[in-house]
Length: 269
Ligand SMILES: O=C(O)CCC(=O)C(=O)O
Ligand SMILES: [Fe+2]
Image (cartoon, rainbow, N blue to C red):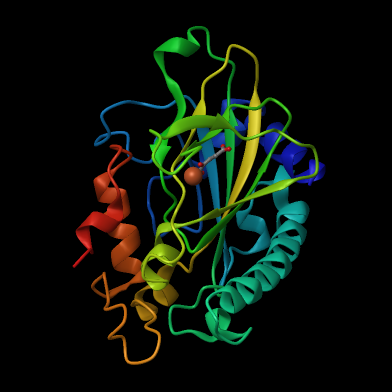
């Protein structure tokens, strides 16, 4: 875990010429490096740079991955996929289904993994910007690793009737944070809820984090379909969402930008 964070830090601290070849805003490219994926659409810019590595089902060839992260990214991906296998088994059981259900489902929950490394430089005026604006994740699940700087917060209702408040997620060395993403909320027909979160900008830094999004990309995303899983004949709880391919969901999320609204509103029946 610490090696993955260190590798991302060294990549981001290389001279601009070394990083330039990886700069891309083309969502089809399996390796992309940029800041603000929604730069031209979102209401506000955020204070971070991001390296996207779409590792599964088909990852980039080793030469396409920046040398600083090459070996560790492949090993880290393998370990996070193993963890994801266990998490989807537990979630299947929590839905009252057999262990392999979510892995075998036509949505392909475990098939794809994008490893997304963020680098948040120290900000001279942190009160004027966010590290990451509030959002829910475009994934089935997100396994998130952060370093010790902190700044990640979740929106949480302390008591059922209270207004939700922002709560700090402790930056524990060696710990992962697991977020339910929007695709799993749709699939579970609202039985699992995606979590709204954000990252504050800080005057200390840099902060490095790795968000591992369980979701397929490319041809696999076009082939995978998400529709609410209904229990019994569905009469007790009818579908709350239209079905959509993972590709549709991702395109809609990118077009919508981090504007504070939920992508799921668009699919809600
Ligand atoms: O940097 C973090 O801790 C969170 C990043 C995040 O929320 C995301 O990539 O979706
Ligand atoms: Fe997120």
